[in-house]
Structure formats: structure tokens, C-alpha cells
Length: 129
Length: 129
DNA sequence: ATAATCAATAATAGTTACTACTATTATTAT
DNA sequence: ATAATAATAGTAGTAACTATTATTGATTAT
Image (cartoon, rainbow over all chains, first blue to last red):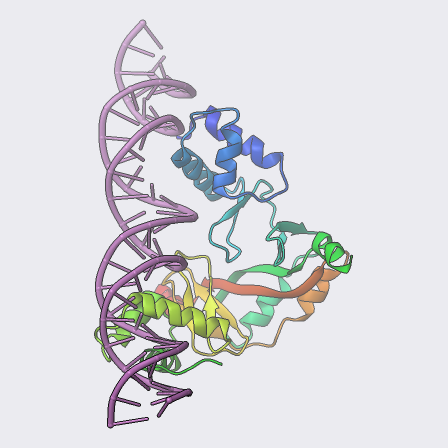
């Protein structure tokens, strides 16, 4: 049975209030402003619980550590190779690529993980100056 | 230009001789059969050099550690949620999804990383028995 | 051929991101 | 209120990788 906790609520609130796809460490630093003695282990445990429950998304974009997204709706992400920022992409779903992948494959395709990379609008602007 | 060394050649040979997408640890264990005193650090260093040079692929499929593929041609991978195996998918390229993602996005899409997941043919067979 | 030079290695120490453990505290059910 | 139990803080531990360093081996100059 799952109980309520101040710590978990604070973590969720922080994630809902940002679009920056923070790392566990960043979540920790920010939630500590409200709960100074929160433990890093608590942050990790709750991020895992929330992600497993489908309340948030865990993003593994190939970097050294995972990132978290307070928006649990399936959507796609963009990773800027210049500044490292992860941003949301507003685009249609790509479920048709599951069909493409499944053609001639004996197994069952349940889904895919995709992220796009390149140069974000901000870094593009910087470079042309 | 990348030079030859007995160790690097052995690592490449091993990767060319398998389709199992091994981890660095597995590469280490297997290459040690030929070069017993090769160091794990050497394996990591050479895998990184080869991947950076484009001679092999580094795969980050969300698991705890990276995997390596001796085939440097861009292709797609499938991750079985049952047995954890990573296999190659023979399918057409998906560069059109870069266009989809780029529509309405101010930045530049250079590429994407995609892997598919589900149940592989072997595990499907096991379950229906 | 031999010495000088440079690159690659083995061994190992260090780091990062995360997980496990344990005693204590907070929340919920009775 | 009290008992049951989930969640916590703090700490120790682990896995995967990276950096350092002394040594070995290969290449080049003499």
C-alpha cells in the first residue's frame, strides 16, 4: 500500500513546475530548498516509484545519467549536441515505425524508444551571429 | 589515423565474429582467452577509440551498461524484454522521421536514435509452449 | 645496430551515478 | 490511542567506467 509523503509531493511538484528534464541530482538540489535534509536516496527511490507508476517519464538519452520528465504522456525528445539541453518535440506519434520494424521479424514489437539530436534553436542563433 | 595493436585487433576480431552485441565486460572475458593479461581499461579505451572512429557502434539501450556492435553500418536494434538480448533488425531506414520531427521545430535535426522493444522470436516460442 | 622517441599497455586508483541497508520517523488502519 | 507498516535520513556499498602512472613495445634517427 502506497502512503503519502511530503518528500514525494515536493519532487512531483518540482517536476511539474519545470520543462528542463532535470537529472536526479538537479531534482535533489532544488527540492532541498524546501526540504533541506532530504536524502539523495529518497530522491532516487521516489523518482523510480513515480516512473514505475507512470506518473513521470524516465529518459535515457545516452548521456551519463537519466533525466526525468514530469509529463507522463508519451512524447518525443530532442537532445542538443551543443548545449546538452533536452527539450520536448511537438510532433505526431510514430507508431507506424513499429509496423515497419515488425515486417519480416519473427518476434513481437511492443514499442520503440526514439530521441532526436542536432542543434537547438538557441544554439543555432548563437552560431550564425 | 588509427594504428594497429595486437589488443585492438583482437577486440575488433571478436566483435566481427559475433552478432551478440556484447558489453565491455563480455568483450574483456572473451579477448582474455587470446591475450590473458589484457587489461579491462585497455578494452574500454579501445572500444571508445573504435566507436569514435566509426569502426564499431556503441549502443545505449537504456540498460545499465553500453553494448558494442562490430557492424558500423547504421541499422536498427531490437531489445527483448524477456531475455534482454539485443538483436539486429533488417528494415528500411527511417530518415523520414527526422523530417516529421523537424516540422515546426526551430532547430536542426541531425539524426535520431531508435531502438525497438518487445518479445523476440525465441521467447515467443517458449511462451506459447 | 643502437640509442632516442613516441605510443600503447597493464595495473591500479579514482569517480560517478546509483542502490542497499538500517535505525528512526511519519502515515494510515484499527 | 495504538499497532502496523510505509517512508525517511544517513551511510555504506556497488557497477561501470575514467584517469593516472610506470613500463613495455614499436618506430625513427643516427
